[in-house]
Length: 223
Image 1 (cartoon, rainbow, N blue to C red):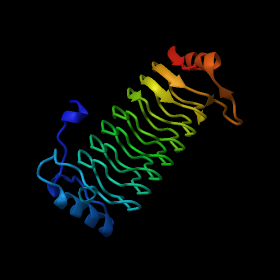
Image 2: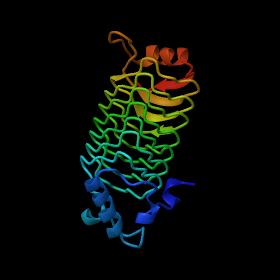
Image 3: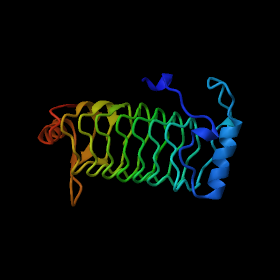
Image 4: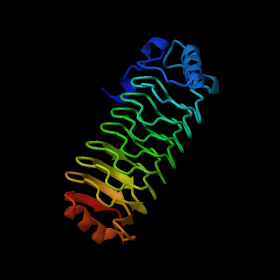
């Protein structure tokens, strides 16, 4: 089902598991209690989740309506967030290590400087999201369509991009040593650091050749 047409949880009953931290639970309860009945109602400052810096350890936020949530610097380590609505949310500086965001709506997310080591994004919609300067080592983006996503200066070491479609993906100065790229295709911008121990920046035809050698035979580097 298209992300725009999905129905997301907007009540306390929709929460699969609450966070262990009392303050964080209170913030989530207050947010859900304050949501208008009409899911199409205009979003205002008073109807977004204000959870910057809060600790969501123990929670399961899957399938919840978290549209435009402020989760900057939040602790979301190992938290399930599958099929959730995070459209235009703020995740800058958040710890998403080990979190599962598979199938979630992450369009236009601001996530610069986040930590997402071994996070899962399989099947998520990341269109026009910004993950610049983030630590995404070992993250799983398998079979995801990455349209106009910014990974500028991010550490993507050993991330899994197998089967991905790149459409205007910015990889400028990102680290990509050890990435799984079999079956990936599309258009990217470089240069990319492919070195293991020391920097090795590639761009243009050299970068295309590196992608082909990594199993991504249909990658075009924008010039």
